[in-house]
Length: 88
Image 1 (cartoon, rainbow, N blue to C red):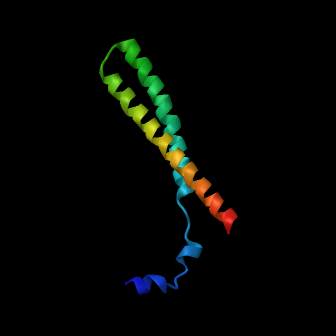
Image 2 (cartoon, one colour; image 1 turned 120 degrees about the vertical axis):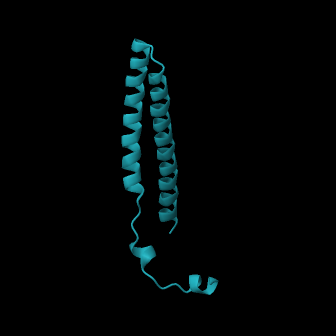
């Protein structure tokens, strides 16, 4: 099996498209919406005193944090790619 992997003649590495740009756009959308939703739900929690809004705040904040972490990962991957292109 390793011989097959070494002698591969397909064109996939040359023509494959990376989904990183779409992932970056979706992460930015999730970050913005997560932050806005966190603020809105926090205001509703303060005004109504209802506990359900606190759960909504936690969920929206978690979405924002995960999106921010994903953007950091994408940034480091982009930096790695830039360094690889400069070395070749």
